[in-house]
Image (cartoon, rainbow, N blue to C red):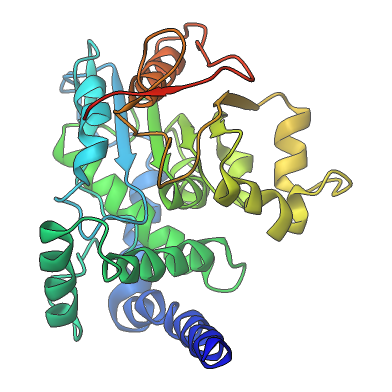
Length: 327
C-alpha cells in the first residue's frame, strides 16, 4: 500500500513538472513575444515625456506565497503584513499581482481546470487545513521551479515583469523617474521576484527584493538587484532546500550570480528566529509568542518594516523558548 502511494506521488510530481512550463510557453507562442517586446521597450525608455509628479516616494510590490489562488485573494494570515506596509508614509503597496501565472490569471479564472480550483478553494474556505489545499501549493510550487529554470525562466520571468510594470503604472509610477521599487516575496514569491528583477532592473528602475522564507536560486536577476534581504527561520526546511538544490548557491560556486552578489555586499541574510516555513510556529503565526512578547507574525512584520525603513532588525535570540496563546 505504501509503495503504491509513493509511486502515485512520484508520478504526480513528474507529471506536474512536465506540464508546469506550459502556461509560460503557451503565452509566449501566442502573444507573449509581442507583449514582451513592448514591455522591454517601456522599461528601457529614456524619457516618456510625462512630468506629472508621482504620488509616492516608494513603491512596494507584494508577491504572495504558494498558497495564493489569484492576485485578489491573499491568504488571510498574510493580510496584517500587507496592512502594515500600506501604513508606511509615502509608500504605495501593489498586491494584486499573481506571481504564479505569467498573465496574472488566477487559478479560478478562465482556465481548463478552473472548475477544479473553485472546488479546492471552497474546500479550503470550509477547512483551511484540508488536504485538497495542498494541490494549490503543489501547483504553484512548480511555477517556482519554472522561474528558476534557465530554459523556461526567461519567458516566465518576463511575463511576471510585464504584470509588475502594468500594476505599477496603474498607480502612477513613471518608469524613467528613478523611484525605488521593492519586491517583497513570501515563499515562492521570493524566487519569482528575483527572476522578474532581471528585466525590471534593465532600465532606470532601482529594484530591491525582500525575501521571506524564499527558496532562492542563483538566478541571473540577482545581478540587477540593488539589494536583497533574505529573512529566514532557523527551522525552515523549505528555505534551506534552495541552498542545496541550486548549485550556484553552493559555497564553492565561484562567479555565480549568488556568489557575486554576496561578494558585492548586496545580500543580507537575516535569521529571524526558530520559525518553520508553515504548519506550527511559522512566519505568520499569530498564536506563538517570542520571549519579548511579540507573536511570530509581529516579528516578521517588524523585520520587513525595519528593512524598508533602514532600521535594525529585531530578531528572536537563538535558543529562546516560545509559548502559545489563544488565537
